[in-house]
Length: 112
Length: 240
Image (tube, rainbow over all chains, first blue to last red; front, side, top):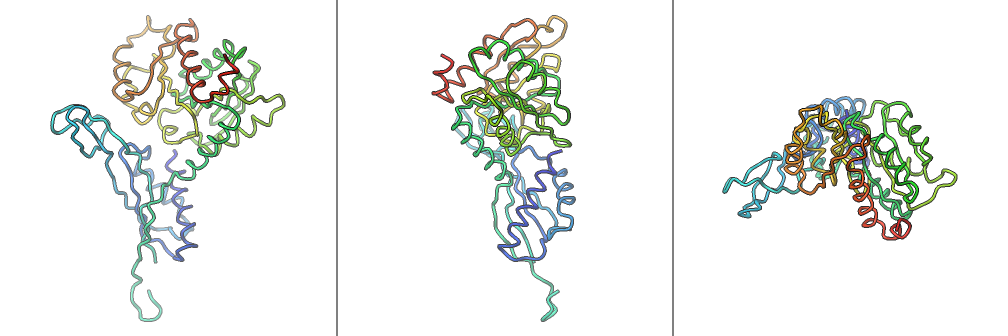
């Protein structure tokens, strides 16, 4: 299950920032996920709980923000937010082209 | 609690917007530099377990290794069976065992390439075939630094798989429909499968092939040669 590998990367990012920003405890990790990111949110939470044990992020909450991909209609050129592969244009019903959607970021940390 | 005035510690916010896979992407970038330096065209081969990746590689090597140098990195949880099958054909192969891991990442592949290029008799300018761990889910998210992604689906797996595994199929440069010799024995809807691939991956070429019968292999070899020519102009002179 690769969500554990992703969770370990998040913990590594936190450890890098600990030295730079001098905090003792992470209260909340805010993660941004796109709709086409190959990460299952609940598996990520579970993995993070395991990976963070014994670190400043032990017991930290994980807040996941789901952000859309950018959809463009090849027929009428309307733009809209897209959350699934087969989204249709709200204006004319054509299947949308989409860009982005792979977001996998640590947006911010709430620390003390 | 604050030791000075007894207030509860108010959390402060550290804005990061840091890409979590930046580390893998950095290794993928380093791999690209090595590939360019050594004239390697790298292909990431992806499929379910048992679709026929290794068999296709063995047949490709047997048919092409006379005029196209090929080297292989094999990824499996356990055993070196696949690397040994490739080595029996006479081309260099390196096995990566991921243990509990479900995908190859760029760091592993970077070390794999170091092992290959240190082998006695190694020659630059090869087509580097990276056979990923058999898995239609996890490997999709990990850039290895490859020039192209080859996603295989055998006809015994069902025509709906491109829609069921969109994260994988949407990244394909070519989709190979393998074991086509079995079509007479199956209720596989080939046209529906090709339409499904088109829907999820409009950019992908599609090739229907069979290692057993040889059907479609010329198209596969032609596609490979085109990608190699596009990626490494110097290598073209070696294969022309």
